[in-house]
Length: 294
Image 1 (cartoon, rainbow, N blue to C red):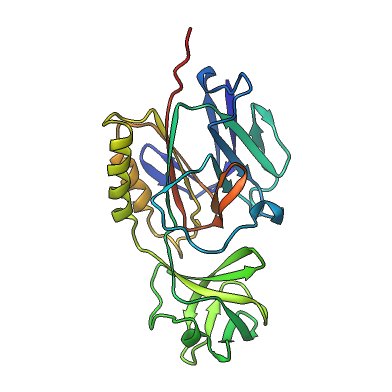
Image 2 (cartoon, rainbow, N blue to C red; image 1 turned 90 degrees about the vertical axis):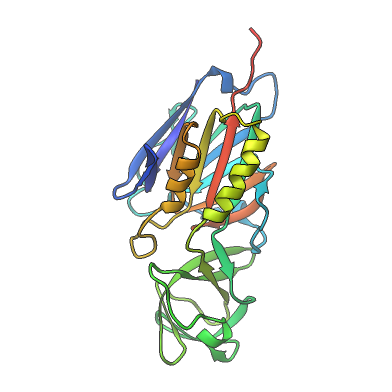
């Protein structure tokens, strides 16, 4: 029996997203999911308390636009002042390491991924900033240089990607000022490379494309279960509703779903990062139960 879990900001419960208080998720997978006979795991679940280990998250900063990812590992960040000291479970034991992993065997896994972001410009260098205001980029007013829309969307739909080598940070844009500067939720520094991304309002179109793919892959049968890892900031300022996740639960009404929401999600394949942690990601892995001979 495989037992795994930890404290996260949000869960999917009975098809509805809840996230007003930190929650403990404990997932129990039966004997049929044991990795044995020297076989490599078909799926790895990873819950990390922080992204301080930069070596784990070195990856290209470009978005992926593929519908299906050949991923064998789902990663979720649950860092934050409220979560650091809370318990984590790895293979049924309390875990105090940075990363909490569980390896599973599965007959088939199918991983879908939605970035939920559209970049508005190429990365450019910060030339002036004051406190929480980004004043100019590449020698021009920040809003002009970064192709900022004329109006901010609510809930907050603009994010500033701050590129640090091969890693990245995300800062919400709180306001667009009349002089073309941008009010940010956290400061940036002169010389850093930044670009704006707009959060897409809904993932309903990708979700319907996902449904066509999984219906074909599972020959019209309902998958045994599904894992939803979503890296959503839990503030109402950013997300008033989680209709994308609830729509996904509706489309998979005959499949049990484990929905775990955190600060950011990443994907790996053979321990290589496919995409770094991003907080606007919706990732779904559908799994069929391995067939064991008696």
